[in-house]
Length: 59
Image (cartoon, rainbow, N blue to C red; front, side, top):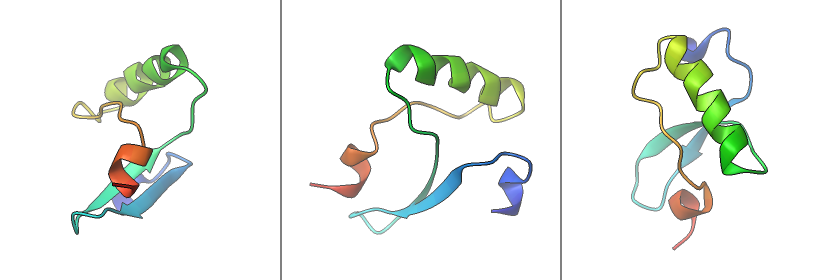
């Protein structure tokens, strides 16, 4: 989690596939998520992407 120092709201999620993923934010629309994605990428997280959380935690 030290990698995300200075970014509030990052959570660690244990997925059904056995991997841990780090997620950020809860957005009511794709447009809002896309705006925040651009901000994250500008702060150095070039590989950040948008994905529905339910698809990571439920089969």
